Length: 557
Image 1: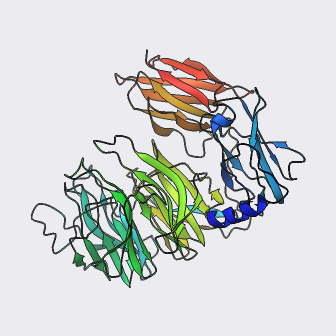
Image 2 (image 1 turned 90 degrees about the vertical axis):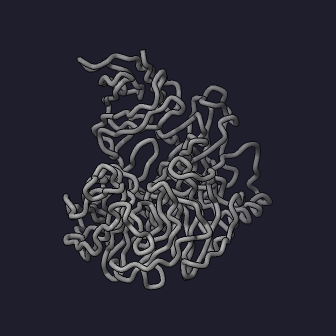
Image 3 (image 1 turned 135 degrees about the horizontal axis):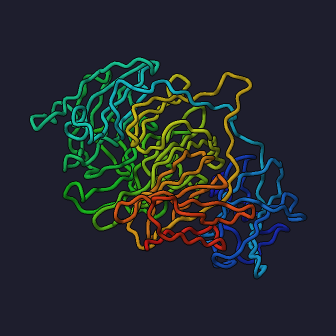
């Protein structure tokens, strides 16, 4: 249901026998249709019931006649949010109530929402097709399904001087099944004798789409200390035509590129002053072109009526005759030193008027993720936020999201994903592993996709006396893998769910010495420090079990 239509129905409800009183939840607001077993974020303003207060959360399916406690560790009293998996109860008059157990002040949605039948697909299954691909590891490579083949274009791997002598290359590979690959176009981006008028420069995280019977490469990165303001196309992957080397929307990188309604679209992105001389700009504009040469600006930069400036979205989503933006973010610059990460969802019919489907999807805010349409669903795959991510989410309406648990491949961002021959292909990415995986519905009638294991606690981890530090959580039952790595910081807490009764925190201290803290979760849900592993550095672990999520602070002694 769109925000506009929901607002009209709410106006009707305001004159019904359901009366709005005092502050209400930010989500749900009323009239949403939440599907059984989908995940949603319940939101409120903490100041309405007390910041970081002890909370009780409940739901009602009978118009507030009776209430049932929501037992979920995914509650954040600091920012006022709860991640909730919708129970298997079909009902029309549903409410959620959040109560401060100290003051008994509560907040709820003013108008009812509905719980509808599940939209979950229970038999998605990953299979590894190749453990060692013939193409070298890389991230940010383009991938397209074109003329019954999958094509891989370029990519970035500064550690491989043989295959990437100039950080990125411009080779092209193709395959029909994924098992056998052909090098269609060898890398020609070798040294300073390269002529950018006759072939495209090596690049990663550019714009890659199929449009008008051709494969298109639109813009690129800034790794050569200049912007790649060019557009190329090809009908075979070997021979490429330069359409223009002077697009009107430059300089920019990390833009979102889509083929939609017979046009090429370039959306958002930013400049990269640390890599090439330019003014800092974070874009929220929209450009279109039929031929890649003449471009029209549909939405000006700085338009505050829709999504915030962003890019860093790989792939594209055109679904139900609409163009979609799923999450994204911004890269840090010398002036703006912090990145932005988003998990909001927007769509448009014409590129000018945008509809907000949710400001906070149940998947972690992220950048460098891949978005794609497969099996009549929108997919969000992998990405980055404080560390690489390996989760997989899908939705058939943009509002109800399900996760495919049991991801067998290593966490990564800037991966390459494509829907081809009724399968979802995934290969490459920041982990620099040359693997290839495919997902499809299993033909085994007894197979069921893994479910989320029970969560023991939600933690919020922060450093004290450290600079940014790579932390590894050893948690045997974590569906995201163990060890789970992320960049802990002193400026903000990183949320980490814990799935095992005992877990470990591992890192290198300021002097590069190994430290490993053994932790446990009691039967009552409290987190306790047990001991420092023998032979490791001993710092200080401070746990605040009254906070929600539970605070863990690692303090340098």
